[in-house]
Amino acid sequence: MLMYESNEYRASKDWPYAIAAGCVVYKTQGKKVELLLLTRDFDHDAYSAGNTDQPSYHLSKGHVNLNETLEDAAKRETEEELGAKVSITGYLGSLHHDFNHPRNRNTTDKTIHYFAAEWIDDVKKTDNEHDGREWVLLDEAIKLLGVPNPKGEDEVIKRLRVLLDITNGNARD
Image (cartoon, rainbow, N blue to C red; front, side, top):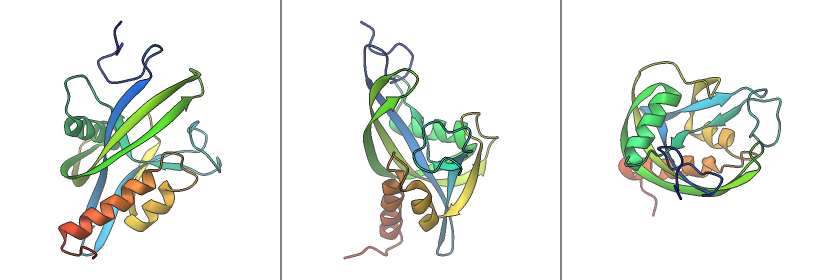
């Protein structure tokens, strides 16, 4: 049995496990921290929960290719989806969830690893999976990625805030 039908750690009919990686892209100006988020218009986003007449916000992420490091996958997906060149500055941990695919009617056991990544430059337009991208303040990003977002990506943004506090010498006791 071939565990992964493609060249990536993507679930298949016979193997329900997937591994993905992505970045939380940020830039700082003084004490202000902005994050670059992906957007989907309400009519494009079949996977969002809650109020479907509003756009949804997402972090860049995607499946890890076979023989690819998590860091390389995160940077590649960020360039493909956000059109941004980045420098990874830290690991933010992972999120794990069961994803119920409405069209394929299967459940995927998925782990997504996230990295903090400082924005360097724009390299191209976003891919066709999303409708756009938007720079938002860190605290606003927590709200936009929070409830009713079923992915829990707001937790990853909270981890970034702690990492940046530690890095800048503002660690809490």
